[in-house]
Image 1: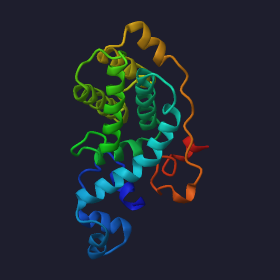
Image 2: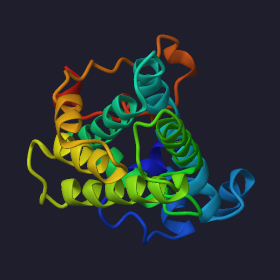
Image 3: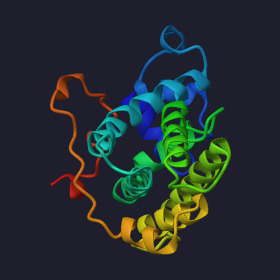
Image 4: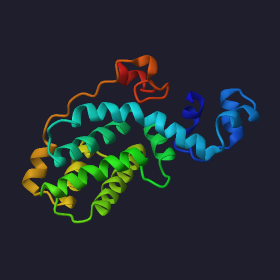
Length: 210
């Protein structure tokens, strides 16, 4: 998985063949197919490996008695900041998550559920949770690419979160107050032995992990 990450975590990471992954891992083509049915299968598994520990850490923070708007803003800020801190991880997330669900099924499901809760609580005026999810995840993906291509400003996590809250129907005053809240530090899981070798912290650049 680490060899696959080293290829996919690049701007051109979507263009590799089975042979490229085999060469990177120093394994035969047959060995590749002992583990994966196709490149699409590899990308799907790698997407889970890349995001699972990070999503767990995010939900350690947001699975609290917080408003849906606050949880939405925190999740957006964490994901965009992660791409800023760890571009290789960001590229790998982009390349592996463009399947049936933008940014993967787990993130998609969680985003929709939060929007459903926000609508039910009267926090969001948008009526269609599926549309709200598409708006949120599409904007997050686009902003991630802006980050990776060097087009984003340092405050883009907060600006994006505020814009999405406004689009979901949060008032300007409330949206500004929510994104102005401190962003608690994310911490990796304690049971490091069970963590993926390509989780966010395992592949964090040395300058960011000190």
